[in-house]
Length: 86
Image (cartoon, rainbow, N blue to C red):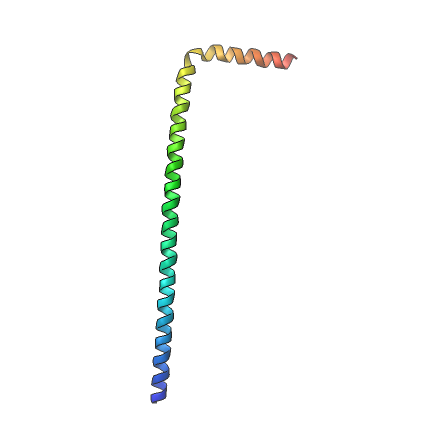
């Protein structure tokens, strides 16, 4: 009977140790995933800033071209016709 109790205690200690190791591994993996999420969010935020800046630049250029848009369209049409006729 005493031997069975000793065997069960050793099994319990072994299982407990393995469970702690698994828990530590899961915590490390969770922290790693959290870091990856933070890095991805920072990258997305940076790309978003770049896109917003590019969009503002496009709008600025469009406003700059607005008065001459019709003449620009005519010029492009003439160039296109000239290339097609060649």
